[in-house]
Image (tube, rainbow, N blue to C red; front, side, top):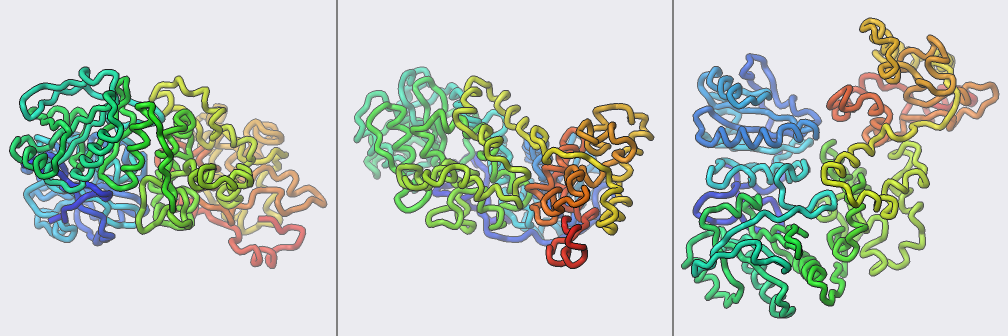
Length: 629
């Protein structure tokens, strides 16, 4: 059986008596064991299917009562998962392969599925028979999430939520949390007091409401309720309402908790279980949703820690408009949520930048454990109280306020700003990791002032804006004359030979074969220097195909007589593949023309890699005048 626990943080899995939440296994750094077998289509396969990919393994039999619910969960996350380097792998326990195939056809599920009629794969992974299960694996082969048994009473929202969180897939449709700098409207609700009186959302109009899903037996919930009661007593503000909704509907159990703890907060129940579903409650308690005066979701938190107490104190006081002392972490990094309390507009514009999703990029490429990568994709890595690979604090993921303004900003690091933003940016945007980084050109993409113009955009428009800010909007190389790949052969004979045998060299020929060689949209990615100085078509047949200059930039200055060789074209052997080379390749191998290419990049690069990684070796192999790669 899968070990039961929580996803982390100071929270509990609620004991409701209704099995209304996923039984989730904690991360224990357990590696997925290697297995192989026969797929339902008859082919042999193994865990090699997961190479350099993250994965969702789903275990099922067509006779499992919860198998249909599992298929619906996978249908919800499937498209986002595939676009984020996550492969779906099934393990079917039916004795007859035809039963498994028929079941998958019924639910429209397309994925490689192992036949496991004897249960060998299931036992190796730790999944028992009788109920459907999901196991999530990261790119390094570690099990990061697992649950078995999906309950119809709970609905599928909680299961979708924990899968998305574990894989950084975004909130998905129907999420009840702030996203992209916007506050969603809180779903309407109707709950009952222990005396049977009703409360609906409209009753809280104009108030700051704190909705708490709690379990009477959860110690972290007890801490949350004590904290909220203390805050209510301290503020003594009629505009603050706490709505404590028990995930158990047994009146005597709640009354016993109230009596033992001497809690004065009103307690509510949800007899129809509708509020849990409408608010996409995941089963982890306490689950705290803070609503503003307009009935919008201002913030949402799971668990209870001293950090969350400080954060929620600031958030609630700010929404109430009362005195609000800053409660930053005295010894470490606080995270962007603390900054957002007072700097709302700046935080909203930050949410529209790629900085906000920098850690998601690492997770998608399986680099979220690599210290060389994590340092520039988290806040305070390597510093006291900063992001720690062992703790993996989600609140410090991404390039945040404290990356650019120092720990605690000017409140705690007043000297930090004196070094200037350009120097700060240059600490991560080095030549190894950023292609043609020009501070003045890139600053508007992250500037709060420059992004303020997008404040009126809808959620869909904001998402489109972020997606549009991709690699193709920037010039990849410095301007120059294109001369054709033949000019490179004299000094780079072996590299030219490797290129000549590659599909890149024959790229224009494929257009001719498809009779698309006069199509400008196609020529752009099947020629060199399209519509640039000296490039195709001005440069003639020498620029057909994807030549050396497509990857290294125009070579006119590099090959000119008496020219300085070093630095006149772009050397790539000292660059980060994912960070830089993908920017070049991705200008043509995008989602529209080559879906999934960015996650196959390393294998594709290995197949065509040439040149020297060691500059000393390169210098010995070439003359001083031909020293550039």
